[in-house]
Image 1 (cartoon, rainbow over the protein chains, first blue to last red):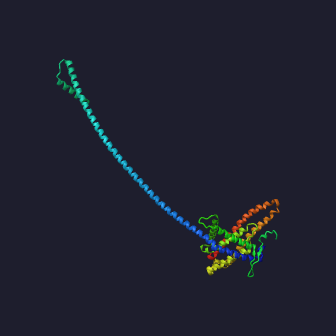
Image 2 (tube, rainbow over the protein chains, first blue to last red):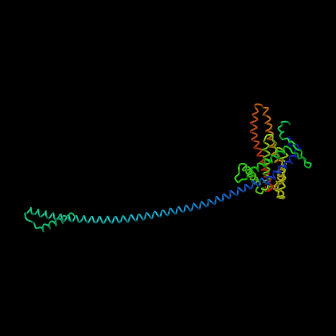
Image 3 (cartoon, rainbow over the protein chains, first blue to last red):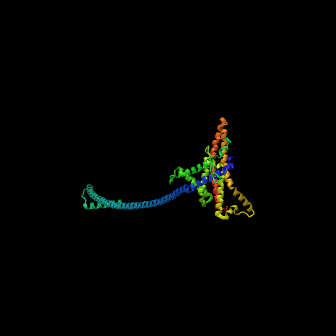
Amino acid sequence: MPQFDPTTFSPQIIWLIITFGILYLVMARSALPKVGNILQEREIRIAEDLEQAEKLREESRAVEAAYEKALADARAEAGKVLNDARAEITADIDAQKAALDARLAEKTGAAQAEIKAAIETALKELETVAQDACAAIVVKLIGNKADGKKVAAAVHNATENANAGNG
Amino acid sequence: MEHSPLEQFEIKRLIEIPIAGLDAAFTNSSTFMVIIVLSVWFFVSFGMRRASLVPGRWQSLVEMSYEFIAKMLHDSAGPQARAFFPFVFSLFMFVLFANLIGMIPYTFTVTSHIAVTFALAGFIFVGVTVFGFARNGAGYLRLLAPAGIPAVMLPLLVVIELISYFIRPITLSVRLFANMMAGHTILKVIAGFVVPLGIFGFGPVFFLIALTGLEVIVAVLQAFVFSVLTCIYINDAIHPSH
């Protein structure tokens, strides 16, 4: 096996020391610090960005809370205005209804009084007609003219009695 | 040795360079070490050429490997091990690229040589041991005597712990070397069946395709295992009491 030929050991080891030494120096002095720096820079940048994002989120949360509050206030205000308007309208309706009722009652009263007067007038006229009829009937029955006053009293009494009986 | 499955592991001397009496010849292995280092450097620095806050695909890949290894080190050795991060990253990348580049046909697998893996493991072993004593002083020896063990058991346990401590560089290096060498040898052996079998050669070809997929997984896994164990050894040096 060529691996166990001792004459090859010294050149291999010497060149290993030279090449590996150069590799180590290049890596340690220039290549790796560059990589390390960029990684660190990125880490810092990401941390900063995260911080910024957190701050913005807090801000947006505050804005959202303010918006919610404004919305709730507006809603409460609207509710109040609505209730006020409703109460006002109800009061208005009630007042108008009362006025209407009063006017209707008045009209009804007037109408009833008129009807009553008309009934009375009619009744009075009826009495007169009844007296005349009665006087005419008496003349026909007994041939004599009856005393007008007595007939009127009798008819009046009879009407009163009939009214009382009916009433 | 012609067309032998082991031919791929041959070290070919390209340029003779004697340094202070040491044999430092530039070989095919050295060539691939240079290619590995250039590849890792290209992978990382080209991915980060426009280091942007929002990464592209390549940059994410580099960042993923960075974070993967950083997490692995942090999880197994704690936050104090951060100083070792460049080393563990270089180690993982070196082994990973060595294993993966070795999967390309006609290339050389640097990690299939025990000399390389043992040098890496030996360096890790010596480094961790020196760091452990420098950090904890004699307290590093607590590693050998787990807390809450009856005194009667201690001598036996210390011997066992001592053996398991000193065997670390061997297990670490042999695991990587043997995995890489065995995989490549098997691929080559099976590939050797394709042509002699003639019309039935498609059988080994299908097998080869499946095995190549498996070998890629092994290449990544062994790089991972090598670095995870390194992290665990570093953890022992930082926290010697079990």
